[in-house]
Image 1 (tube, one colour):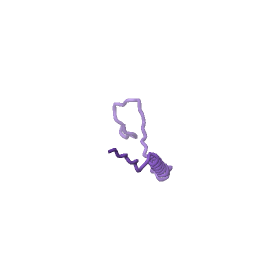
Image 2 (image 1 turned 60 degrees about the vertical axis):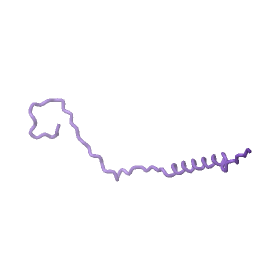
Image 3 (image 1 turned 120 degrees about the vertical axis):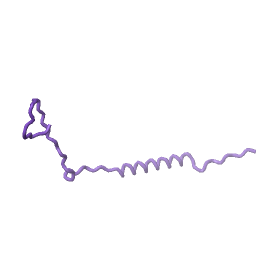
Image 4 (image 1 turned 120 degrees about the horizontal axis):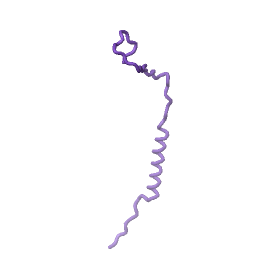
Length: 70
């Protein structure tokens, strides 16, 4: 009593074709869906800056009216 196993309903060529189609569709979505824009310089607020002064001398007394804070 031996029964032959029927062939699978989906062949290896069908699986390969479906896999290639899905890979191409996914790559197309990623490539066509991602975009880059240049930044608009006028829309961005200017960055705040800090002015730094380096002094190499030492003073025993603090100045009355300092122009800069250390």
